Length: 343
Ligand code: GLO
Ligand code: MG
Image 1 (spheres, rainbow, N blue to C red):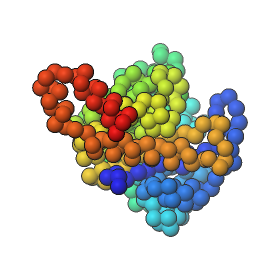
Image 2: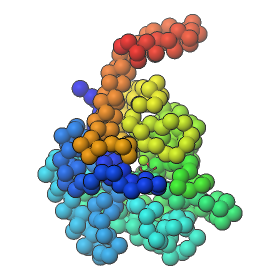
Image 3: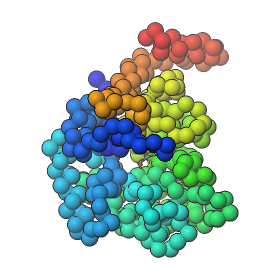
Image 4: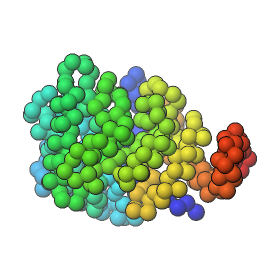
């Protein structure tokens, strides 16, 4: 039995289109996704604002809340919780040059409107977490935006959200690049600094995504540990990544097994989940995957996580201490490899 609760986003089951080619699978309704998520073993669903209310730009504030309540009823039907809502500030014509730090004042206002509506939606779904994946917050042309001004705009935007709702928590999902060239808040270290600069740092934390850490050349388990040291790991997006190239969102553990083990181990060792945190997945099916296998990457990721959890439970801390005493790190390393390969 796993000690953890798991979550996933509806975008993790998708049609397979990429920048170079069209869809390869049929689309699946939100309700059918919920049904399967529950069946596979998930406890909660992560949302973008417009996953919940697709045409939200055309609706009044009241209509948006009413639509969100319908999705809440659907979640209840399948005994699922909502984990977070993320304003999708990268698809809209208003966010071509970013949201909170767009060079257009009107577009910055739009970004705040979407953020306030995301908070309303979160409340209607009975959740208190807003995730900010800052997709276009940075520069494509380095000289087009001052990094000082841009960073301050981000802090101001978060402060406004904290003011709008006195108990909502805001969680930044750092990523060093893609689709932006240079992002403003690229690692967990940046997130901690931004958090500390806001008016209520306790309510501002991070969402560590494995692939994003690897894109920054960092170790995901250490990024997780860094945020946990400040009590600021509000959620995680576990997945995997083959080196520093485009963001791959591979199934958890399929590329870097030892790094995946260490992510599970650091979560387990430090009581992740004791305050209701979910182990979130952010994994993508391959374009070659068939309709029938639309959920296989999710099933595999959960299975791999749970197998690694069993390994982490077996970790021999006495033997580790002995190795530390003897400075026998070769021995410790071999022990880890044998634990992973032999059990
Ligand atoms: C992309 C991000 C993306 C976010 C999601 C939630 O690189 O990982 O999938 O996690 O939009 O905000
Ligand atoms: Mg993510």
